[in-house]
Amino acid sequence: MSAGGVTPRPESDTAELRHGIDGVADAGAFLARLVRLEPAALVRLRPTGTPGRTALWGRLPWGVLAVRTVSGPGPGAGDVTVAAGQLLAELAAGRAGLPARRDAQWRWPLPPAASRPVESLPGEEVRRLAEAAAGTLREAATNGVAGRAVGQRMLRDALLDHVAVVVTPDDAADRPVEVTQRMVQGLIRMGFLGATGGSSGIDEVRVRAAGRWVALVGPYGAVWSQKATDLAVRPLDPRPKV
Image 1 (cartoon, one colour):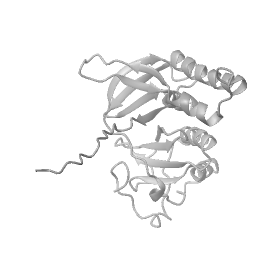
Image 2: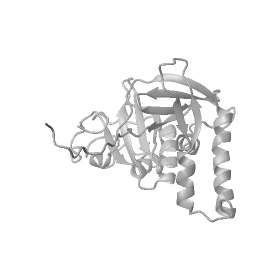
Image 3: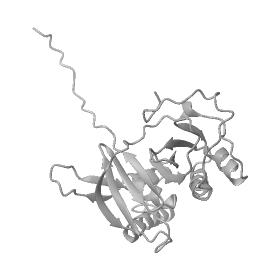
Image 4: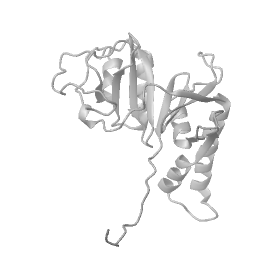
């Protein structure tokens, strides 16, 4: 069984398959941004459960999942994973063929299909959070931190792990939901929020949760992040059982 709970067909059993994407412009925008961030990225085409709609999933270099739903039935072979760059080339050339399958290379779980709404955030606030982090990175890269040089990778990872927003659900039984800069940057860099006052007419970001998964949902797509499982470490008891 593959990640996400669907067993794919063998990778060699797809030479005749078509990608089945009708929303070429939407899919092309998603794939172009994904490949720009990660040239070797994979894209997973997954049925949404709604006829004529296919979800495109990709993993961004900083460990979050991005998804955009486009029109078209998809390959009609369950979950299919291919190279994002190859699928982008097929779409750009106006071809309908499905690139060689790479199902075995997809190693990441997907969030559950059902999730609950937690909060809505103004789009402008999410843009401000993203720009503030980018400005901090530029400043530290130029001048260091407290007068000391800091490695670019170390600084970037620290900023991405920073919790940008904490949402407290109305239900006191629910835990606060943390939104990290990894998610904020993913939403902005993938173009899921769009420009202020864009054609969607929506300028807000919805926060959703499903178990240990948290999502930021914009007008054009969503970014999902899974919180690491808390591990309890206990010392072994050296005393024999009696």
